[in-house]
Amino acid sequence: MAKGIAGINYVEKTKRRIKSLLIPYLSWNIIVFLLFSCMAMLTSGDSVMEKDGYKSILDCSLLDIWKNMYALDSTGMPIVNALWFIRDLFIISLCSPLVFLIAKYLKWFGVILLGLFLLLNIHLPFKGFSTACWFYFTWGAYMGLNKKNLFSTVSERTSILMNVAIVALMIFASIGYFYDIQFSGFIYHVGTVTMIFGAMVVYENRASDRWQKKTFILSTASFFIYASHKPILVIIRRYSFKLLHPDTDLFCCILYILVPSITILIALAIFCTIRRYFPCLKFLNGYRL
Image (cartoon, rainbow, N blue to C red; front, side, top):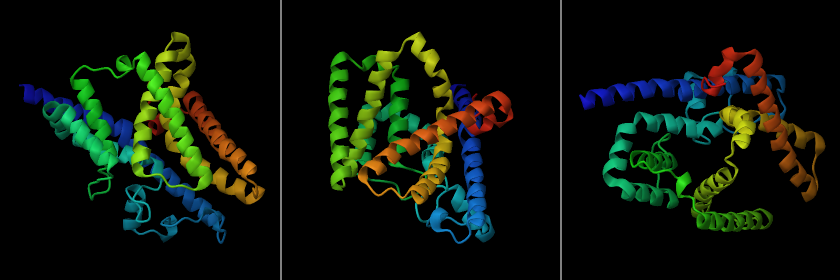
């Protein structure tokens, strides 16, 4: 009986993930693929929109279209490369019975082992099965199975340590940027986990009803901004650099801040427009408005 219930839950959760992950994933990749094709045709001969591995719809075979949707040869990512994580998340959700077994029987050992694989850049030789996704998904599954709440474990001492770690990582990032020093993937992954805890610290300090009401629209729109930001960012960045020709570090730094800010505002404005006037497009946000 329990196995039957588990099977039903798996099917139901898979259906929900098709709506929340697969449909928006495919939709955004198709939209950007068509947008890129239109831009390539309108700017024929202009190198601004050219990118290795990208082909317009006029030059694509069925195999090329599949690669656009799943993994391009040049990057190993879909045409909307930021959505690689959604691709991997959907794939690992299909493997959730295996994740359940790891979290239930290997417990912290399984989570730590996957974490070591991530830090040491040990990956499966198949695109779509990233170690990062396995680690974070299994970590979350372990916390859920054992009724552990990461927010409640963030103590005052942890907050201090996280703040120190965040400052240290910002210093590392600044040194790497200004002196062109390439830090290892180890530092990158440690920084990612640190920022996760740092975000929890900020949330715990700001988790009032007033704050939650103000940030509700942002939390709802977060997936939309995440999915749409790359094509908007690429167009604004490439054409701003082509038109403005930044020739100083200060000018580049200003654009480094200004271009993403404009991108987020445009994506948020589009989301608010869809939410108010075109709710039929809610599938672009995983059916959440």
